[in-house]
Length: 291
Length: 289
Image 1: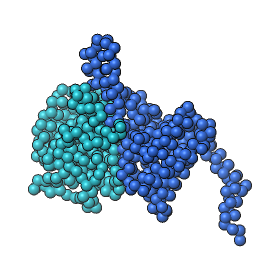
Image 2: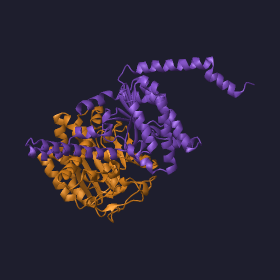
Image 3: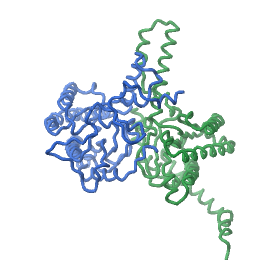
Image 4: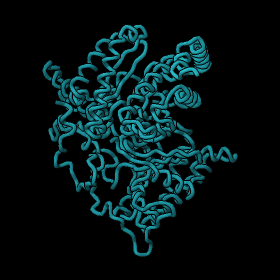
C-alpha cells in the first residue's frame, strides 16, 4: 500500500502533475485569448464577502476564513491581469468593519500587515509585472504598523504603470464624498484667497467661487480619482448590496453577484463576470459617452 | 486630523427630531420633520395587512423602484413605446396600493432620469404629459387614501404646467401621513450629491459652517430626500433584468438590499412584489459590521 503522502507528493511534484498543470495553464491561456477577442473591462472592483461564512461552513476558525480569502484573492488577481484587466480594486476593509469584535479586527490588521510585508519580499517580481499598488481610504485609521507597511508598498511601486491594484482599506463612500467636498471647498476658498492677494480686482467673481463646485471638482478630490470608474462590480457570496463601496463610481457599472463565497471565488467567476460585461458592453459604452 | 472631523457629533442646528434605533450605525439615525414617522398610522377602516409568509417586523420601511422595461414590453407586443408607458402607469397604481396596504411607509419610484432627455422628443413629451395626467387623475384619490406626494429631482427643467401641478399636488397632500409616494423626475444621484455639495459650499462661504464640520450628517440633510421619513431605501427593486443602479440613488443606497428581476415593469404586480419582499426578509443585513 503506497502511503497517502507519497501519492500526493507524486501528484503535485511528479511528471503527471507537471503535465496536467501545464495543460491547465495552456487551456486557460487559450480561453483567455478567445475571450479577449471581444472587449475586456478596464477596471473590475471586488467586494470580498463571505470569509467568515466560509470558515463556519468548513468548521474552521474565523481567521482561517480570512486566510483562505487571501489565497483566493491572489488567484483572482492573477486571472484578471492575465486576461488584460488594467485596474483591479478590492474592498479589503471597510470603516464599518471597525465595529466588529476587537479580536477579529486585530486579526485582520495583523493579516494585512503580514501580507503587505510578504508582498514587499516579492518586489522584484511585482516590478517586473509593473503592478502599482495603491491603498485607498482613511489610512490614519489603520493600526500604525499596517499604515507604515502600506505606505512603503505604495512608495516602492510608485513607478509602475502596467497594472494597478487599488486596495480599499478604512474606506466607505460616506467618508470619501464629504472629504471630497471638504477638499473642493478648501481648494475654491484657497483659489479665492490667492486671487485676492494677487489683487487682480475680480473680487465680485470670487464671491461666487464656492457655489461653482462641479462634478469634476468632486471627482478630482475623491480617493478613487486615481482610476477610471469600474466597469463591473463583483460581490461574492450572492449578497446584492453595495455596503457603502464606490457609491459615486458605480453609477452605470454592471453589478455581478456570484453565489460563491469569497474563498471559493476563482477562474470561472472571473470568466463569467467578463462574459456578462461583454454582453452589456454596448449599453455601458453608450452611457460613458453620454456622461 | 481630517479623519476625526467626519466622526465628530454633528452641529446641533442640523439635528431635527432624530429617532435613534437600537444600533450604533450612524446611518440609522433618522432625521425627519415628521413627528409621526415610524408610527404605523392607519385609518380605522383600513388596517394594515401582512401577506402570508411575511413577517410584519421585517417589512421594509422604504422601497425604491426603478421602473424599467416599459418600451421593451411594448415592442414585444408590436406596440408603440407610449403603450408601454401607459401600461407602466397602471402597474405603478397597483404597486402603490399594495405597498400602502402592506404597511410600507415610503415608496420611491424612478419615473424620469436626467439621462432620459436623450430619448426621442415625441417620447419625452408623451412622458411629461402622462405624468401630468396621472397626477391629475390621482390627486383626489391620494387625498382620500392618506398618501403624501413628493417629487425629487431638478423640476426647473420640466414644462411649466407640470411644475405648477406638482407644486399643487404636494401642497394638497402635504398633511397626509399614511403613506409617502416619492416620484423622482429629472433626478440623478450625482446631481443630488452635487447640489448638496453646492449648498454646503454656500454655507461655508457665508461662514455658517466651517469646512472641518462637513460630514455625513450634513450631506444627509442637504439631499433631496432629507425631509422624508426613512430617507434610505431598505429595498431597491429593478425590473427588466438590467443589473445596475443607473444613477438613481447613490448616497442613499449604501446599505440597501438590491433586488433584480427579469420581469418587465408593466408585468410587475402582486406576485412579483411578494417575491421581492420574501427575498428581502430572508437577507441578513449587517450594515458593514
